[in-house]
Length: 229
Length: 229
DNA sequence: CTCTGTTTGCGTCATTTTAACGTGAAGTAA
DNA sequence: TTACTTCACGTTAAAATGACGCAAACAGAG
Image (cartoon, rainbow over all chains, first blue to last red; front, side, top):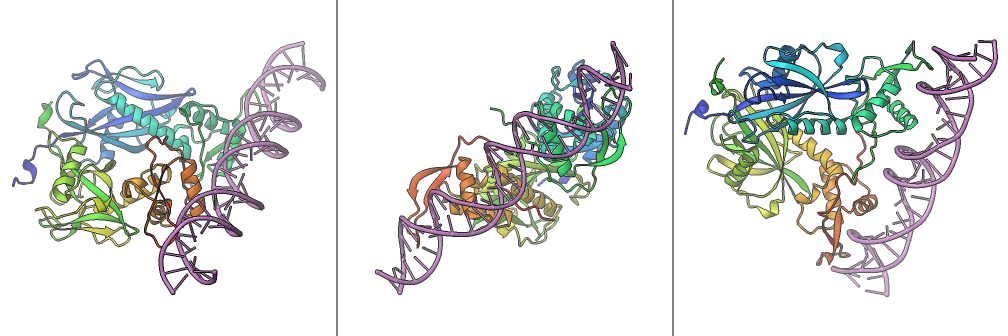
């Protein structure tokens, strides 16, 4: 029997699906690669796991060095093992997705990339590796999660109006949700707390500003979406 | 820059949480290790990913060689990355869980193990590595999944009565579910198909036998469980 | 100051879903 | 036949949901 580290191991990469919401659009951050493979193609930001790193360490490193951001919501998505997913050899990818507020970060291309850009999730370019697959799974996860778990506020400013939250849900779920029923559900579930402040300077009636309720008990609400067939 | 495969990579293992249901008890299959580390301790069955294997290949190999079973329901759970989870060095584990019908398999210890045994999920021994953690996550996943997705039949015989399915749900979810409401939901959702056959030889009224409806559309039912606090 | 158009906040009501429970038929054993 | 248990099918009240009405709050135009 071989000793422990004589086995050859696949490389381990972490790939990130970074979601941002801005101007009523859900977007994903993509890198244009400067190097082979997939030179000049768009891909998800990613990197190899270093020996002493946890997955989250790797995520932070990628977010920091390639995108100049930190302290964001991160969740593990799935691990991808197709033997041919990377032309350089056997690479296992652990997918994570991040939710960020683009207003808080000024995204810049690191030295590894030609360019970094936000892409509307409905107008995605071709992606290198199996990143289209990872992206699709991330979007699906976000869509199901937001229906029963309060992740929406991760994409908004700290203070937001019910209407803004409502628009976010409609944008992500790609459906129309009755404004008044949505308000009732969100308030009944104590998803948010009224701050007493109002958003000023708008053309019409000034809406109240809410913030996320951190004491919210989990699974306490359910936004329904018509099942498509 | 180093060439592609000069980087040192963590080892990659696959660990399995194999659930079985028998005698109104949900159980998990554990191995008693013959070798260090955790010699003579109970652990989840697992193995290292070979260079040319997919995760599912590794799962099948483990199930076949260590437990003598094949063709079972498998789903990826999560990937575990704690740096100290294996005393031998850096090992990333990809967790999978399996659902099997113990009546179909005769479990035998392979050459690597002292013993293989079913343990009631409510009476688990101490586990080596971080396997307690993996097990807990698997149990949680099974519990949430069974509430909206038809996985129950994976644990039962091909033909089963509504009462048997009902007992399975109560056992897994550790709660009481009204018998009549359960029946109605399962039937309304077309979770099962009536075969017209009856289970004979019972003491009382002979219940009808059902089988799983393979045309079932997803997310078509929802078994509710009182939220515990 | 008044009128107009729009958004916001709250409310109503019919319908559907859910939880709780009743009851008689089917079966075995005495 | 009787007694006892499980099975299959109902009933009903309460809660959740979906669809929609309406008046107050605001800015801007006249």
